[in-house]
Length: 400
Image (cartoon, rainbow, N blue to C red):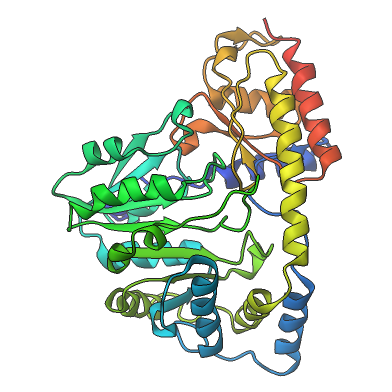
């Protein structure tokens, strides 16, 4: 009999992948399913990146590269941090990985000992707690309310910190809420972090470029420069450059940490794809026209979707700052009965019913640490979005 490691006992499969699989199963049965569950841009990878990938293949750039990434890409990422975030990192302070998720995994493996605590503001990206469990750490989830724009306050952070606290996760703009921390928000959190020298901050900026209403992006080390040696800044090309399948993430941090993370990567996956690295280099160096058009489109969809959801009785949706998600509350629907006689007691049951009854795949807020809410992705065509909302409205009429 196979005996599994204790570290996996609290780990569960990705909820978004499970819902995607169920939606695919229903499609295979002939059902017309609309998926608003996947966090993946619906735009093409920029032409410059595609062409660079093809060129890399044709020129035979298909061998191993240095584990932390090719020098040209690390140099360009350092330039990106300076240009976009006013952060001074040398190329040696950059690690390129197989997606942003691997950067996070490397970080946790590098600094977390059994029993170390990691503060995770909720709602959170589904993978944070499970990755902490894999590192044998303890996720400390702090619920951030809709009234506070789903953002962690300085008082909440102070209350969550103990002598065992090793790390704080920040994600801005957020998956699943789309809310972004302002410079003032981050300065207030920095005041707390400054008083606890045993802890670091990991700031996940994957949606940095997808920000609306003229808002200016800010990242933790940028507004707390004295804490740069206690900060790991995580980013990548998946969302801003529509390169999810290329699996290319990167991070910047203090040199001793980056060296250890690189060593861990060298003993796990080794270097990221050589072809993806060339494509990412072209994306970072290329024009921003396609990115700008994508952001304008998402902003328009967001405005429409928030308005449409708030017109549905019992739904309450705040307006996100960026990313491509809305995170409305459906708590007023709980306790209602479906035509089949099922009582919808929570967001998990509600999402399961909406998938079956309306053919719309959504992710329950429970998976993000926020029961009662549901994540809608609007990384789909406008007409698809309208069809999905119409279906939800229609089946809701049958609830009692």
